[in-house]
Image 1: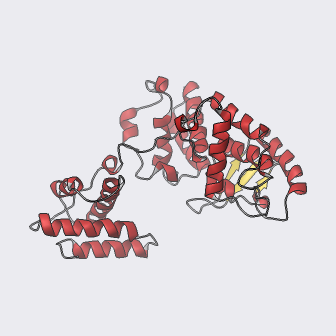
Image 2: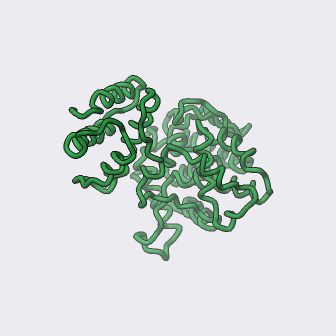
Length: 322
């Protein structure tokens, strides 16, 4: 690196490395940024708005995620420079996302019922695992009714579920902070029935939702199951025309339904959000506030939402990591 920003970029990457964060992706794009400055703006002395926008508009041989990824890198670099007491332009977060960003599929009550009906009725093998029909109905319902992350459900241990009290100890989560999630009575009863069946079905394993060999479901296997049941729940719709559904969307559906219920009850969302934040295991309230943007159009004018204040809470994280 040879531009005026070379040393700052190296120190920024070193700082991320010391924090235990990957420097690979940012290093790639900031190296391109350094080359751009040397070739196109050699007289630059500060990270200005014009410099950042000019670089983002500059043509590069890259894929569809190139510009958003470059934007994320230069935004993070600008925040670092500012934190170091230097004058720098910080690119607004909304410009570091692509206009084609995937929007989660928020299922209607009828769609959720159809999906669960498909899990209940399917007797075929999936992912080469003949026990899937016993696991899937409980696993996907737990995702939805408790708003858990797919990884949290996949890694759930036998000793972390108390179906008598309805408590789930979530230990394996994004923020590495344990939390207690409480099931509904119906969900707890379903787990009790599943546990009785589980005793005779599975080999000895610590996983609550194991595969037939006792191992944990992989991300790919859970994704396959989700798409398969989604197709079975919509037999009259060609699969290429179905909205994309991911296991994570059940967590989004849970959060949206809770917020909608509070609005119907005319509760103040800003008072209630901390409760949902704790339940979902979010580190920052901004991550929880994002879900307000996913509620139905008919609620946009609700007195329970102050959109001017909400825009200030927009998260600087990917919603898919929430």
